[in-house]
Image 1 (tube, one colour):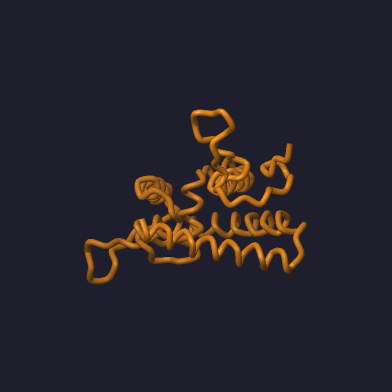
Image 2: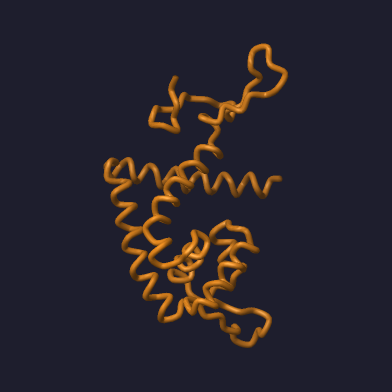
Length: 174
C-alpha cells in the first residue's frame, strides 16, 4: 500500500481524499490523500523537530517561540496582529505573550497616541534567545531541504504561496 505520510508518492486525486467506500454507510476520509491532514502531520513533525532544539535549553513552548520569531522579524506588532500573521488562536498568543513578558523576553508598550493598542518588541534577553534559536531553525530548514534541488525548492514555495492564496479565497467565499 502506498502511504504518502511515510515517503510514498500520493496518487492523483480530485475528490479531496473522501469517498463512499463500497458497501459502506459512511464517507471514508482517505487521510493519506487529504491535504489538510497531510499538511498538519508534516507541520507537526517539523515543528516538533525544531521544538526539541530549543524547548529545554530556553524553557520555551512552540507558541512562545513562534511569537518571538514573528516579533523578532516584525517588531511593534500587537498580539492580535501576531495571531493573525501566524494563524494561531488569539487566546494562545495572548497567554504566550503574558509568559514572555513575565520572563523578561518580550516588552509590551503603548502604541503612540492610541492608548488602547499595545505593541510588542523583544527585550535584550529576548533578542539573545532569538539570536541563538534562529540560526538553529535556519540550519534545520537547510538540512530538511538539502535533498531538493533549487528548482524543486522554488516549486515548493510557489505551490505553498498558491495554496495560501486559494485558502484565502475559500475563506472569503464562505
